[in-house]
Length: 449
Length: 171
Image 1 (tube, each protein chain N blue to C red):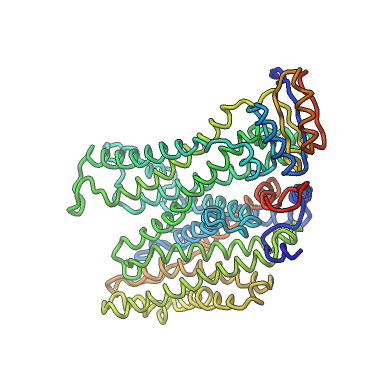
Image 2 (cartoon, rainbow over the protein chains, first blue to last red):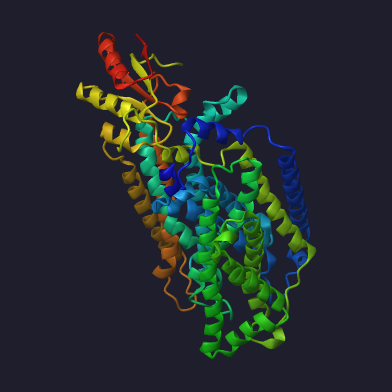
């Protein structure tokens, strides 16, 4: 017991109990689950209806008016891309750092990553207008044999997002294979047939583990620089331009820290109810939430610094356009968005200095909602508020937000939650194989290895 | 069509040190082609098996190098194919193309790693070798392919090491 007290990351169950408990989460779900799924599908249908109307009427329906031609859709795109980052941080970066507490939470965060990137990937297509020719972004020549402009950050983004989606999906699927085999061995009938096909003949033989463990390590090593690059590239969509409020060298690290911060916020929002619904309290403990809280505090503090530095640099630069942009962020017509971002991200995260708050799930859940809200506002402020006041005051105008903006935003949450709920019902949300790796097998001789 | 069963002995263990003792004993007696089933990777078993490092890394390296080459080749070739001078910048400007080359390094490297894992895992066929669902749960399985006249000796070695159940296959 003393040893366990010093190793809170180590599960206290036996191998058989781990299989039983995690497979228990795949049994017939409760009424609450179906209600949540129904809600998610209904939200998705709202989005689908709005998208159909956009196809029919064009982007004017979303209130696109000069100078704010990037508004809620691009804000929501950056928001969802950011959400994905915490998953890769926890599944790949903390794997390389041998951080054992990640084990209980990494599967659900990795699934969140894939579904968040799937959601984000819809937005460039929704936003471009004339959505039926979205494939013009791909590197093939047009009718005049012109190739895409590879000097454009928007095209870098196409490559970054496509790579991120492919690699994070691959990483999730590879991690699932041994667990799918464990399910195959426990179920019967048509479910056995499906899981048998999905397990790709996995038996856990030494000849398989030998290549699997190495391959998984290299995938983690590849995903690590990728995750840092993706949000850097997203930030360059803005920073490479000369719009006041966008043109900052701080943008890449500022966006990466914000992405991880927002992602952990979403992890907490999903994991706290999920743990209760799936009865996983003994696997995902206060210790895990305490660590997630510390990670939130770290990234939230980096954001606090970045916000302060943005304002400082605007003042110190002596550039009147930068100074005006930042003055208007705090005291202009969109002050409510500017202050929402600062309060929800920079200030609320500082509550996590207190251990009592980090281990109190109610307070942590409320904080996570503030983070989600604050991080959406952060992107909205950076994108829409910066565009609303360009160099010439006669061209200033506030973004016009319409029902079509809200419809797509609601639809994106529905789309994301729908996939996440279906995943939680079909695959283990806690990695069976990695949890078992942390539990020592019984020994006939006591003593060290 | 089911492959003909491989003759040999299958043992099930609950204790890891008993399994490693059996593996060490079998290897000392010249049984090299062992199949050890575990629900999760285990360092003690890896140490006892003394297998060389996987060649997956070669797939990762080749994939990554192909990606970086493809990234630069595609962007430079496409820029030069229809040269358009934009903003006074060089036709083929390397700094912006680093981003594309980097992303393709990761993409090709990751896909090639997966292909490597699959190819190398399938290279050793496990068809005809017995498996039990308990091995993905809480037991360690060891299958020793051997001729019928060796089964007695193998069986007693496995039992002495601490196997809870030993069965003879394909005899």
